[in-house]
Amino acid sequence: MAKTKIIATLGPSTFDRETIKIMVQSGVDIFRFNFSFTNHETFKEYHALIRDLEKELGRPIGIMSDLHGPKVRVKELSPSPMKVSKGETVYFTSSLSSNSEKYIVVDFKEFVKDVETGHLILIDDGKIKFQVVKKSRNYVEAVCLVGGEIKSGKGVNVPGALKSLPIMTEKDESDLLISLELGVDFVALSFVRTASDVNKVREFISEHLPEGRDFPWIISKIECKAALDNLPEIMQESDGVIVARGDLGVEISLPLVPLAQKRIIRLAKEYSKPVITATQILESMVTHETPTRAEVSDIANAIFDGSDALLVTEETSIGKYPIKVVEVLEEVASTVEKALPPFENISFKRSPIARSVSRAAVESAVELGAKSIIVFTKSGFTAKFISKLRPQMPVLAITPSIEVARKMLVLFGVDYYVTNRRIERVENIFELAEDIGKSRRILDKGDLYVTVAGYPLWIKGRTNLMKVSIVE
Image 1 (spheres, rainbow, N blue to C red):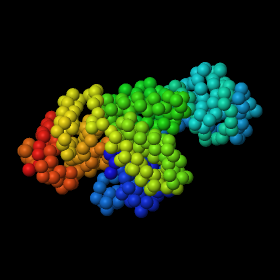
Image 2 (tube, rainbow, N blue to C red):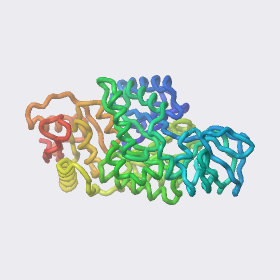
Image 3 (cartoon, rainbow, N blue to C red):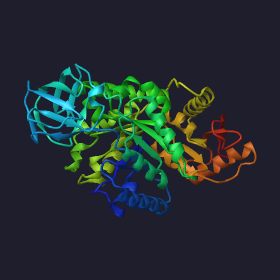
Image 4 (cartoon, helix red, strand yellow):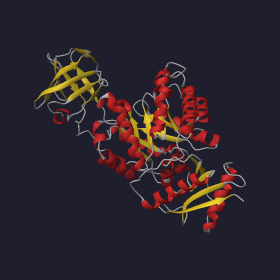
């Protein structure tokens, strides 16, 4: 299997047990439920199906809930649909009723308060563009820069504005509650703007997490200009990030999107956070069985940049060839990974002991030609460091928790092993590492391997131990 992890969105094309099973066998690590289109009944049904398949296949499968987020949309139009031409004046409001003039009513009450003269207003993913020229108490006046036909329900973006938007709507809270009740591994937050947004959701989860459920990793979607402006702080408070190139390409100019992608991935390395690249990965395969050359190059560059995982959306949710999409991702990733350097030298920004031990382990493994790095981890924390250093040899993370094993499915190059075996003495750690390494057929007689752990074992944040061993 490729070291780059694959996240597939479920939808009408893949709401089928046999299809989901084949996708897992073909390389999917995590399934995403997009709550913009998924109702609670469907979510419950396929969450249970995935957990049942997990038992059948004997391997963890990750589940991600992607919240809809505070998207502003066109509410009322007069006439409907409304045609606007370049140079024409229209009025945006959240309170006035439509009249003979061209008013566009949006579904966010603080819209007029947040928007200022000079701001750009983008509708339908930027296809129609306005600039604000005047502001009054109840509406803003804007001139059309790029015309077209506006329909009710279309999305509205105002780059750099709308700071009063809450991070979660009532719908998001309801969707998050059902996700916590069933037990998801990842929660993806849409339209994160500040680190405070992440902390508010973390507090909500802490208050509502059912007893016995593991805390999900919070994955912030970087898809607006404000998120880029506050990226280091958001990165620090999140458990991982998504390079959400769709809405990001609306908020900033298209030539800046690849530069933003590289910056997001680079910072994720420094903070040792998993990073997922998304949007139009294999868009042509929604309707065609083979990808374009440009898409294959895009996948390769995302991996060279340092993406831990690739997320496909419409390709597997409504596309004609969902299984083929997974096979293409797996083939391209496994081919490209052979061209990666032996390891990557990164200046981590936190946890000096864990990062020093992890770096020493990877550098020793590379220099000595080790067959594997085996890491014991309670929370997946140490596995994140080792993953970011991109060692060329297999990395096996041993954990006492299947919930942690599912979360590590988002980490580049990290495999998993769940054990409840008790450790009485420090020597037992290395004995267990060798036993599991041989059982997983990554170690054989005479092989050199490196073990990373914390002692006492299974205590969070105690990475303090590294040993080089040879299988007798």
